[in-house]
Image 1: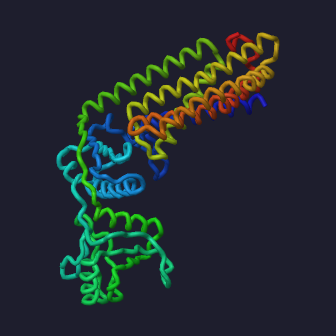
Image 2 (image 1 turned 120 degrees about the horizontal axis):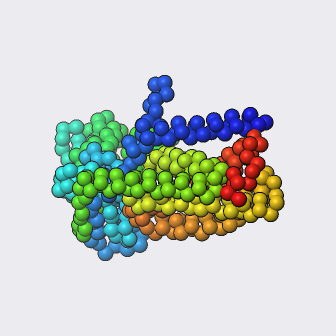
Image 3 (image 1 turned 180 degrees about the horizontal axis):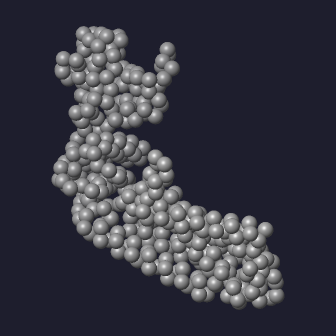
Length: 412
C-alpha cells in the first residue's frame, strides 16, 4: 500500500507537469498536435486590438416587434462579419435597441463600419439576371412544414406588386432556378416547380429546422425597416492589447508564485499538495475556457486570478481545520477526514454566494463584464473539484505511505 500510494502520487504530479509544459509550449502526440494555450484562447478586443461600435435602432417599435427587429439586424451583422473574414467577432444586444459589435484584429476600421452598417439588400433574380423581387416586396418569411415535404421549408408572403411580378417570373422560368441574393451573396437557389400567383411561396432545399429558421431570418432581415445610428465608436491599437496581455500574464505569474510560496511556508506538506492541486485547477479552467470557445479579456484574466485566490482560500480553511484536529490529539488520518468534513459546508456557502453574484453579472452584464462572469463561474465550479476532491486524494495518497506522521509536516 505504501508503494502504491507513492507511485500514484508521482504519476499525478508527472501528469500535472506534462500539462503545464503542453500549455506553455504545446505538445505533439503522434500525428496530433496540441497548440499552446496562448495560441488556443480567443483574445478579446482589449488584448488583441481592433474596433468596437455601438449602433442604436431608430424606430418607434416596442416589445416583441422591437426584439424581432434587433434579432434580424444581428443576423445580418453576423453574415457580413463572416464575409469579411474577421475572426472572433462579438455581436450582442445592449439594452432594448442597441447592438454592440466588437471586431478584434480589424485594420481598415472605416471599411468594416461601412460594411456592417449599411442597409441589407435582398433580391430575387432570374437566370437571365432580371431582378423580379426585392426585400421590400417580402412582407414575412417563416419556417414551416407542408404536405408531401418531409423537411421544413421557408414560407414567403409577398405584397401586391411582388405577387404580380413573382407570378410572371415563375410562369416564365418553370424548371429553372430563381436566385435569392442577400448582400450580393446567393443564399438559396430554389427550382421553380409551379407558377406562383397567390402571394405566397415556399423555398425547399432539404433544410433542417435550424437552417430553415436561419434562412427565414435572413430573408426578413433583407427588408428590415429600421435605421441604425452609430452612437459610439472606439479603436484599440494592437500594441496596447499586447502590452496589456504581457503585463497581465506577468502579474498572474508573480501572484501565483507568491501564493505557492505562502502555502509551502505556512502549511508545508498540505501546502505542497495544495500547490499541485492548484496547478491542476489552472489547467482545467483553461481547458474548459478553450472548449467553450470563450473570449479572454482583461476582466477575464482578473477573474481567473481572483478564482485562484478563492481556490487557495478553500484550502486554507481545510488546512486550518486539519491543524485544529491534530492539535486536539487526533491521528493524521482522522484529522484529514474530520478537517475536510468540517470545512466543506463553509466552503460551499462561500462559493454559492459568489456563484450567485457571477450568474447575475452574466445575465445582466455585457461585453467584458460577461467575460469576467464566465471566467469567475468556471473558476468557482472547478475550485470545488480541486480544493475538496483532488487535494484530499493527493493528501491521502501521501499519508498512506506512512512517511509523514510527524505533525510538523502539517504546520502544527
